[in-house]
Image: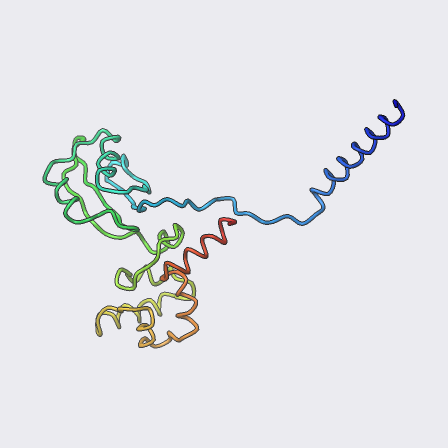
Length: 198
């Protein structure tokens, strides 16, 4: 019996050693260092002149926005609270800039996160919300093409769809297809799934 137990132990140790060595020699699936979050909330950027609210926050509604402001021990006047509620600021990619004086919020400005930040966070871009700097952040766009896009927008109006960019000299079908990933939420969701290892 003892000899049989010795053989079983030897076979078990050999199997574990082969398994352990195989883990390092067999190809492994590459996974990103950072996992993209799947929250149902909206991602917004908060900033202020005092650096107390600076950061990207994922929230679901204006009440959560008020909670973030309260956590920073800041006072939000009622008229600004109403302005925030009326302007529907809880939209993906929105940016709120607060002006703080003596621990009181005295003004708030509304805008959009830069395109590079929205792309990094997986927030779809919108052709109507792009500045010259935003166009320059897209892959394959340099300062001169960004300038032509901006000039065309001023001359002929906003681009309702990505395909309308073909009216700009230097923008063709192939370039638009490369950009479509950043403007189409369905393609962006598939892309996020690939980079997060799912």
